[in-house]
Length: 208
Image 1 (cartoon, rainbow, N blue to C red):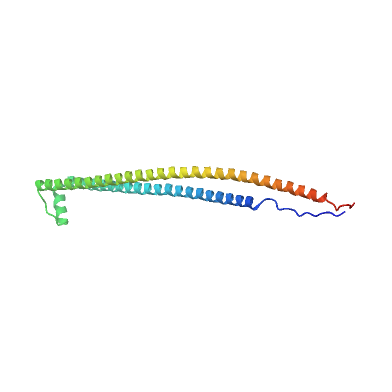
Image 2: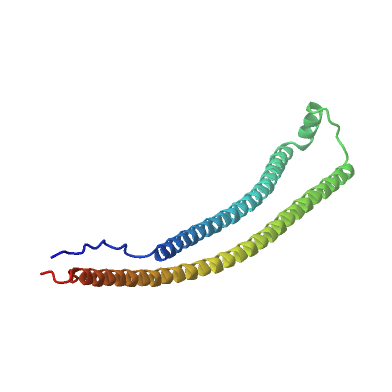
């Protein structure tokens, strides 16, 4: 009896293989986009923190200068007061002579004191204005950065949700394509089996 040999057929089709390849590429692209969005969000957080630290450092420097000014002024006043009370006239003459200075009247001293007080008030006013200016700039910058961060965060959150939905959709598509591929392969196997059985049962007429 002559037997007909059959060749094994290829399981699957080029169409199904292309579908799987396309789905895999889209899944990789979506995952990469999600990772990039996360990196941008981290950069924004770092930027806001850096700006906040700079503003805080400036406020601390201004406060330190004010405190240093107060301490020097108080120290000078205390030392001068103690020495002056010990011997008012002698101290005044010796101090004036040693420093090439001239004694002045109480009236003139009061004028100088008033001038010094005025200059002190001017310095305080300028310091206060600078503190207010820096504080307002800091608050304004912080509000802008907070708004930008909130906006970017909302955008990134929306994009992340969209990417998650796209990934979920692609995963469902892959499952669907995989099921279709499995069904196609199973059908191909069944067709191959049926073809093989038909070929085996065929024999030349009259042969036994």
